Image 1 (cartoon, rainbow, N blue to C red):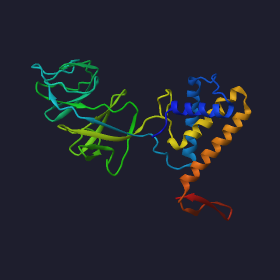
Image 2: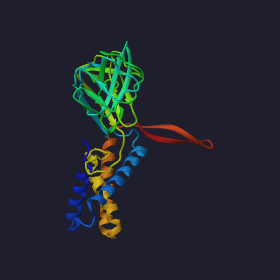
Image 3: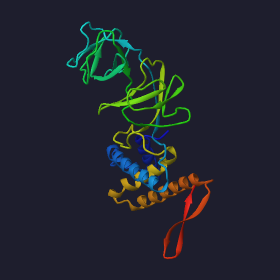
Image 4: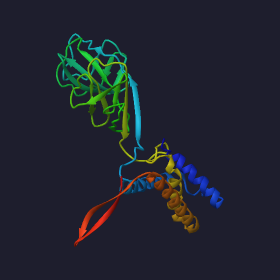
Length: 288
């Protein structure tokens, strides 16, 4: 689990109290939050440049119980100009979201802004007309920080339905597959018609933006003291406490070096020719 910005700020204040006898109250939480965000960008950039693969620090998991399918309840059907849809049963979880209406085996994905009882309102995107009793399927809304599905041996392409991994495909999903719909504001998981039960997904966060103390930093809790010392180093610069700045930089460097050393334990060093200068080969030392 990655620590939150609030945890990093708390550790930084504890370290400042320990080293200087004060938590430097002039450094407000909003200011330190900006410092945490800056430190996070710097550390992630460093990690990408020197560490090979980006760490799966933003790897998250999501799950939901699928709403049962229902049917259109309207003798006149649903036309492309309609902005409401009435159904026979209301068991949908999302207050606003997406629906797939199936007419003669053809899906039509639409979006609704609100729902009450058996009525969906603020409906947009109706592509063609539908008739009474056409199947209506809910598309579960993915978390707001969803970036992309993450593959694994257990989850396949990142989605599991009732314990069975599914494969990603474009367009309307067929049995054993899933798809993704994006209306520009939210992303929705699209499963085959008639799907029910429990769905779970592995995904990576879409962003490293930190603008709230609840937001998680990009690297795991192994890095929390690196974050904290870097925050002190940058945060104290404006106060001119160069003794504390120097200490924070030294401690941050030491903590960072220790983590990077531990990460490389057990890796075999391989030397191979990489480039030529004249007739001399310059070897590159590379971690496998």
